[in-house]
Length: 169
Picture (cartoon, rainbow, N blue to C red):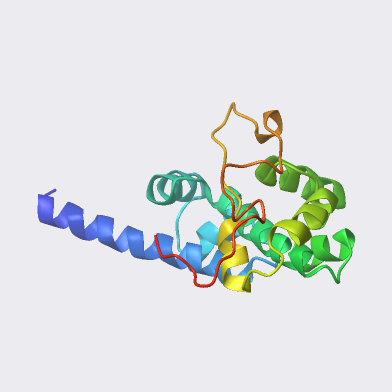
């Protein structure tokens, strides 16, 4: 296969992977599994998982759960829904699994996050609060539980800084 042909195939596959990612972003509240996502782009589930991880740094299911947890964080910051309501609103079907995954990604339980977020993002515009509180995927083998969840070096996250305009990275 020529280099040009291989490059064309690679670009076509990246387009398909982008479709999968966009579908996850749009339909994160629906029941999605890797097999259904793979069928939608005519790939095997294993191939989709490998290629998605290469392109985006995590497998499709982890990406889906990260999106769900990000949305859950926003709903919890609002403070008007119970943790159970948030769990179901973001597409999770088990409160226990949701709480475990939330704790793994965020470093504290959903209830603790609601309390901490109310203090640390008070007075920040929603777009800034979302950016500074975005979950960070921890590499396999490491745990966020080993560090105090509410203490960071970032004064914005600790609620100590006055932010008037969002900073672009």
